[in-house]
Length: 262
Ligand SMILES: [Zn+2]
Image (cartoon, rainbow, N blue to C red; front, top):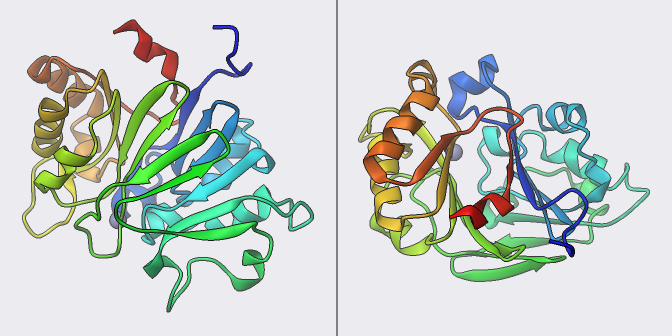
């Protein structure tokens, strides 16, 4: 397609680790998702190592238009300060937006106050609201069930729709909210654990079966999920659901034009 940006419309996984043990051991990386769509670049959930993973992959923070946090937990927010510093070139190039739920910014803010001045502004994520940044628009359709205020996102860009289902306990609202061509799902748990507010493989299977995306990418793996080999889980889910399910891997770059093959 001639009107595509030279680098294409891509989503890069800067890490696939989820929850504390995978993240503190860095068995896999934990840098978040980097979107480059319609020429607009956005970083989502810059966990520990986001600055390392992004620079290593020659992604340039000064080109970011925004950083979005699904929630304040460390594996989603640890590098937000350094990424704001990098996005704004230490405040010499003031620009860009930070999006986060209110409780990430209130009594114990995830961002240092002096860095806030480097930004064009901060937008509070709320249930059912729509936002736009450059050529990307997104909504936060529903508040997730998680120990802190958490939202996933439904994006519309580059002629495609895709959803990022961030951390949550399973509830039917997820299936009602994230219908799209591509699902990126944070699947921390191999088996459901009733006292932990995270999605499991059976939850992911149910969501994929209900929403029938063209492609689903699993990421944010907890330790047991990792030990069970996510690529084998993905293969099994592909057979069970009839949807192409892919296990995320560090540095994986998904080109949205792949969605045109279906
Ligand atoms: Zn969390």
